[in-house]
Structures are given as C-alpha cells and as structure tokens.
Image 1 (tube, rainbow, N blue to C red):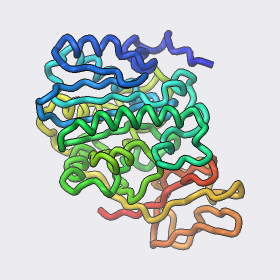
Image 2 (image 1 turned 135 degrees about the horizontal axis):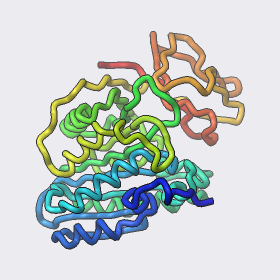
Image 3 (image 1 turned 180 degrees about the vertical axis):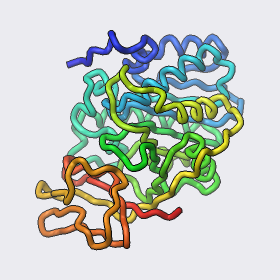
Image 4 (image 1 turned 60 degrees about the vertical axis):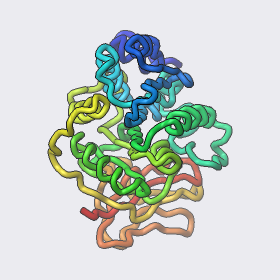
Amino acid sequence: MTQKVTQVVTPVVQALAQADFSGVARLFSDAGFTVALPAPGMLQVVKPGAGRASVAVSVGVHGDETGPIEVLAHLLDALSRDASKLAVDLLVCVGNVDAIRAGKRFIDADLNRMFRPVRGSLAQAAESARADEMIAATTAFFEAAGPVRWHLDLHTAIRPSVYPTFAIVPDLVADDAKAQLIDWLGQAAIGAIIMNPQSAGTYSYYSAEHFGAAASTVELGRVGTLGQNDLSLFDDVSRALDGLLRGLPAQPVKAQPHVFKVAQEIIKHSDEFRMAFDRSTQNFTSLPQHAVIASDGDHVYTVRHAEELVVFPNPDVRVGLRAGLMVVRVS
C-alpha cells in the first residue's frame, strides 16, 4: 500500500522521494551542465573536461530511513536554483524507491546486502534488480571520473545509539582519501567511525572496493516518518554536505570522532540464532570479555577482548547474513 505523504511532505521532498528529478534536472541543464537520468531515482550532473571531484550521494537505500531524503531534497533544490555554484560532478541515487513509496524498509530483502557478486537466496528478490541498476549507474559515473572520488551513503538507524551519529568506513580506502573523509565526517559532527575490514554487500563498500572512492555509510540518528523528521538534528551534516558540493573551504572540526575497528562479525548461520540481549540494546553498548553475544545451535559467540561494543544487532536478518558487529576503540 502506498504511503500517504502528500499532506505532510513539501513538494521538494515529495519529488525526491518519488524519484522525480525533472525540476532540478532542468535547472542544472539550463545552467550548462550535462545532465542524465541513468535509471529511475538517479540523477547525474557533470561538467565534462573540468577535472572536478566526483561525488555520489545516496539516500533511501532502506525505505524507512527518511531523514536523509528530506535533507538531500532541500539541499539539491537550493543548489539547483544556484546551479553555477555546484563545484563537483554529482551522482544522486534514491535507493529503494518502491520501499519508500510503500513506507517500508524493503520489499523482499535488504537492498544494502545486494552489492556482492554472489547473492544466493537474495538473487530473486525485487531489490536484486534494483541493485543492478544502481551498480550500472555508479560504474558509468566513476569510470568516467578523475582521481578524486567520494560516495556518501546516508542512513538512519533502527536502534538508539550511544553515538547518535556514526559512520562505517571501508578500511581499504587509500590513506590520503581516508584522512580527508574522516576530516569531513568530523566537520559533519559524526561521533564515531568504524573502520570495516570486509564487505557485507553494502553500497558504500562496493564503491570503495571497485572504484577507489572515499566511501562511507553514514548513520544520522533514528528512522522516522517522511515529512515528520526534525531537520534541525541534521544541521551539521547538511552544512558539511552543502560545503562539499559547493567546494567551500573546510569548516573547523567540532570534535574528532572516536575511531573503532571491527573485532568480529556475528553471522546468523541458522534459524536457531539467538542474541543474548533484548531489542532495547543500543548501538555501541559495551560488553565485557567472555560475555555471551549470541548463540547459533552449538556455536556461541563471546567477547574476545577486554571490552567490545555491539553495533547493528539484528537477529531477524536472513540466514547467512551479518547479524551484528563487535567493535573495539582504537582512538
């Protein structure tokens, strides 16, 4: 059933949520940019031969994570009306358009587990075809790009968190690009960064692995209803993203994010999988050494370090997928 948003959502937000880029595309085209709509819910704006940085921004990979959709809609509307100030080549992707329209997290399966060469039981899901469209558009965008490549995949979390905003950065991002990305995350007032050593099939990891992009999954608070998000909670990231797209001088970092590394992945191997804590557990909850994290038949996951913090605990994922991360602080 389609989500009824027309009475609470501004036209700017509604257009982006419905993957309608016709208005902003025309304004960028009128300003002399080369504009393309490579697939539904995707907008590419480039200035050929300008040697600009290439920035991909994605929202709505999960259909119920609506705050970033509103933030990007207002930013893109303002920038299109002042189009000459766009200082980068830009790819905008609204991820799971059908799920956004339905007011659901996904239709058949988690889209942010589809960016992998082998999808197994996920291959027949509606999201599998959508991931293929996103991969094709992202490939075309970055293969024509210069050396400076960014991808910011903006999300909101299901659970409350000790750090209301945090980011996951693929560890394979080149050192210089990683440092610039971490500085930007600091400008956006992101409280914590998790350095992730391996892919779980996420969109941002795909961009980093295949195109060398300084990529990150950025978690910006909690899920909310489209049109009813408190946008003041997104002021810092909105300001930082606007500055990146306009090529403005970097703003001072309000506070250096705390940096964590992944200690272990918790994989759900069977329907017997059980977490050792309840659904009220916050992201970044601390567990002491030897504490039980989860059980899966005869296998028991326990804390290996003096302290580990749990992130993204979700016992409801499909068998074979990651049900949580355990992280340790490094700085």
